[in-house]
Amino acid sequence: SEIVRGLSDDDIDVGFLTGYGDYVSSLSWLEATLIFCDSHCAVVACDHPLAKRTSVSYDDLLHERKIILGEQGLLAHEDTMDFDDALCVSDPQSAVVLVAAGYGISICVGHVTPRHNPQVVCIPIDESKMNIYACTKRDSHKTSPKALLTLITEEYAHHPLQES
Image 1: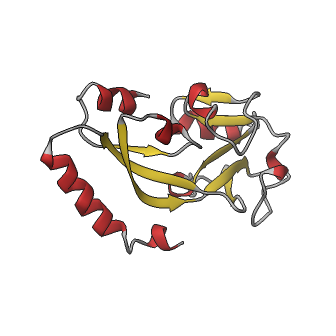
Image 2: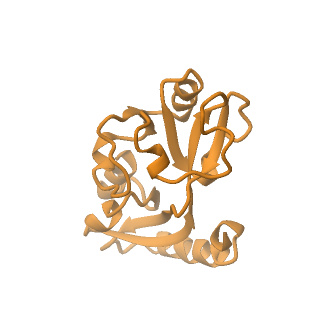
């Protein structure tokens, strides 16, 4: 929400946002350029029953308590899962600590998973995706953000995350 507010107030020229369901497209004043599509991972404690799996489905996670990095308001735009029993935290370290302590599982975008933490296991979620957007204010007449977006889209056109 801070990035969206900064874009709206002209304090930020380009913001990078994950696409929770229809959230980005619901902001009609925002111009969003898809940079790449990533996948979701479930983050579970190393002793969790799912920890030995190579992948999971959203159905496998249905009855797990979720520890989510973000804000409850954004989750209303996520159409894949029910987040009524979600605990929202504001920083990734808190999510990992709570998962490792057995308070629930977390779901995050694949490129930011805590893969090197021995207390948690990251498991790809089947048929999941998360679009990553570079966003600008739609009616902005600034040329620098548009030039930056051109550079980014050219760079990521052949990026390994784009091809996975």
